[in-house]
Image 1 (cartoon, rainbow, N blue to C red):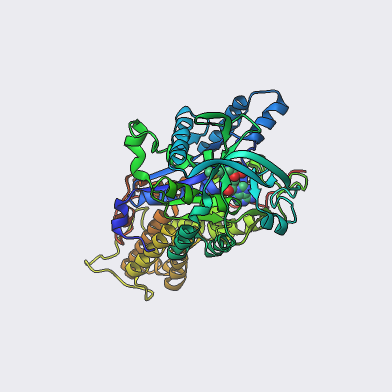
Image 2 (image 1 turned 90 degrees about the vertical axis):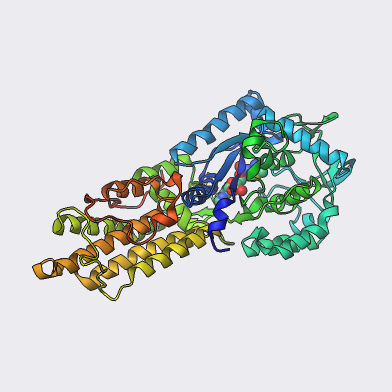
Length: 536
Ligand code: MSP
């Protein structure tokens, strides 16, 4: 879907999964939140009104058990770990607009409101259930599914257990046809394509009603009218996407300020929680007669140094490991690596120290950093540190057979279009392509040679203007992923830009850099001697 101006009028709503509080943040959580952040920043810079939500999932048997083991209350455990998740956000320059916690009173009230509505409309009923239960994931499987999985949890590998419960059920089976139609008629509803096919395949095997309450623990939202039952953590959790906007409380401030963000533009999630988001969630919304999100984007997983991350293998990318990367390469490189090398497609991505080092050198040191330093250094050396003019006689001097305005416009359009469809690497790649063109242009036109000939000063000026202007335009597109270093570059180029105020497209028009502006030399990405080594 290409970006067009009309879209900027429509508010955008992007969400991460809400993370379980019985875990500590690691690369997986940071990955999802970071890619959402890059998209949210880019869309805001385009002038779109964006709401970016993340938060924590705090109920359920796992939290209850972990708290018990530590001899504290589930709420204390939740408070402690939610604070850790929150503290990470500022540190990684993540610009979420709200952080929802499922133990918030207004969330709990709204969960009860929505479940009551489902009950009243008969989408939820009381019944008996028997199935194969994954205790770690709190997920039920049918006999067919369980057999395929060899009666083992696909996540933990632990045996599935046979469980019978009297429970409230959601009539998921009633939505089979509508779900199949949705996925067929709206192919972008689940992305990437391979994930959509997976969901369609599982849908065609047939779907059964799902229990949405539990009686084997108490740490959760009580079922309205039957408090022996606690609302299943997944229903509670999925509803966060609409409770955060106050959709269950039409009189609230939240509703007044945020209801316009629904339906969500994209729910970004990991592939392991696709079924909940691609089938159960839209069916619940259909039952509530509410509009559906535009897209559920399920990325794949980070593995580490070629293997599944595990604490015992020592390849787990936890906050301590992340700190080593950030301390060595800077936060912007961390964000750049996640955004460009991450598992946004259907296959897992390998986080590897050597690869990280290589990408840093190739893309940031030798391309963005080197180009910015070459151009600013030449302007200092040959033009007294002020931006020269591209058209001394009122007409642009064209050199090196380079139609810069067209090249730049193409890169900008490609970068915007890619980001709009959530292709982060494509968007960033288009910006980097523009920077590479500057390098090639310098090599072809050899301004350092022209500088020796006073008669060529007009050409020299035009070349350096064009280089600086192309770098400026590329920098606008790179800001969402590397805000820190790009703002440093803007300062060196004498630019005062406020991306929060929008205007990316206007700013990215060729010719925006003003002749006469003072330019300082910059060194954006200092070299790093050797890759980070895992801690012994
Ligand atoms: N609480 C549920 C989600 C409820 S959303 C209504 C949950 N939480 S979680 O803490 O387990 O977080 C899962 C998410 O973390 C994944 O969907 C993914 O976004 C991220 N990741 C966890 N490990 C990951 C990797 N190794 N690689 C990439 N992302 C993964 O599930």
